[in-house]
Amino acid sequence: MSDELPIDPFLAQLCEGYTEAEVGEIKQYMAEWDASTYISVAQSILDHASRKELEPLRYLRKAHNFNKKGAVRVPKTGYRRDGSAVYRKGNEYLIVRPDRFGVEKIVTYGVNDD
Image 1 (cartoon, rainbow, N blue to C red):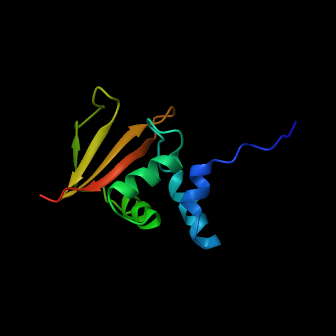
Image 2 (image 1 turned 180 degrees about the vertical axis):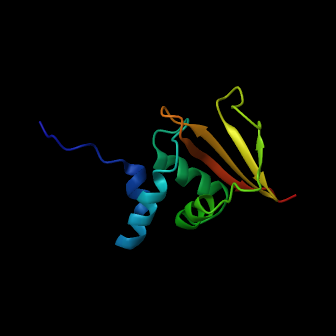
Image 3 (image 1 turned 45 degrees about the vertical axis):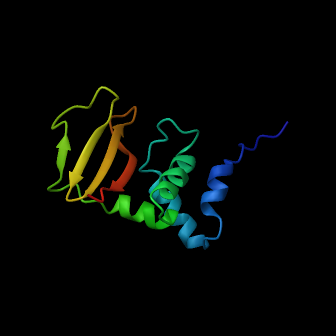
């Protein structure tokens, strides 16, 4: 019996084609995310980046660089029934959910093209 942890196939796919430094950056940004309804954080990022038609590292950078300062938070305090909150600034939005320690983790990032 092996003591090795199972490899997340989504993480392997997410890191495919990136340099070692870029993989480090991806893993750093992943710590800011919540898997929500996905099997893993990597699966969530792959799906959201694909749906938003962005390269995954670029998507992670955009979400990481979203500036909550000056953003409108819905609801202003607390969380919606599904346990999430939305930050909106201009046409961008960031949906977050608190982890078990109360730290807000990213669920998704996007841009409304209205």
